[in-house]
Length: 437
Image 1 (cartoon, one colour):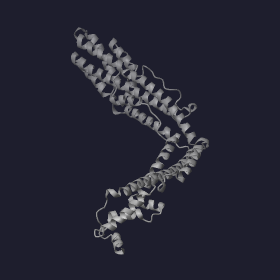
Image 2: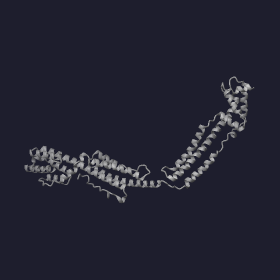
Image 3: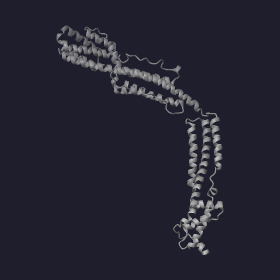
Image 4: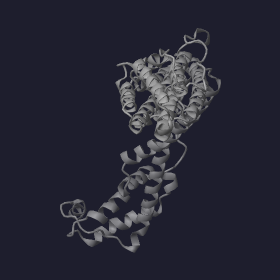
């Protein structure tokens, strides 16, 4: 008999599993026990995880009351209460192996069966091939009989773990802390947030005023020809500005101020580009013309220049060019001579400061004196076109200057308290500011 029993526990030659319909009870019992063991592990792991999550939740509530961070408390507590049981149950399942032998040992320990179930399971799966069939059947039958006496629910109970009671107490503590603990705000976050909210309202108000005034100037500019760069600047100025996400009020206002500074520099750069150079000097030279003109057309041109309006001066020159092109033949020599003297005075007034304008006038004068009225009309037309171009540039320069003033005033409003404005009252928007004067 000893040798026969030894063959049962000889594991050197595993054999195929012996399983018959007569021994199904053992496997049914083990399957139920295995499921209950896993369920119990899930419950215990979830309960322990809930305790850990609630401990973290209590720490979060206390920290939220002390520090007053910017994130909402309720979603974080809900996430901790949900994540704790999930992580706890998954950790318990992965760390604890539950198979048929584990289930058999648990049942045997409870019913004190002295390895009746585990031996039968072992023989069924691992008995050597030379082991007598009667001995194997004896062990299997013994295991099957004891399996029929097992009460799985009693052997593997699924009750409320002790950690669940601790979790219930912690949940009450977390709720009381959330409800009763007053906000302390050790770092002054609430005050800072209130300050940032006020800054945001102030920025919205000042920025809205800037955008409204830029829109008014854009309507005026639409009647005139301006560069694509200036159009893009107007479009960028009409975009609303907002405070960045930050916890410091001073840092929050720096971004809008920096954006406005960049826009002001763009306006100043556009106003200082090469094509804008010398416009003020041109206006001063025009305004210095005090010669008495002999013809009505010359008087109109002189008046327009003396008033600093290259646009009206261009219109006057264009009128003289058209008169020469159409009526030169019908004009008397005295009229042509008077017109020549007027053109000579206008050319001399511009001198060498603006060679393009004075050259056109000098060539027109030369053509007129030589009897080439058509050539004179052509040169005066070119002079009129140059004056019109300068008028457009003057309008755009005035517009860019107004935009820079508006931006600077808004910067002062945002950077200073209302009673400490450096720029005085808001700049006036003049409907005639783009007339090139």
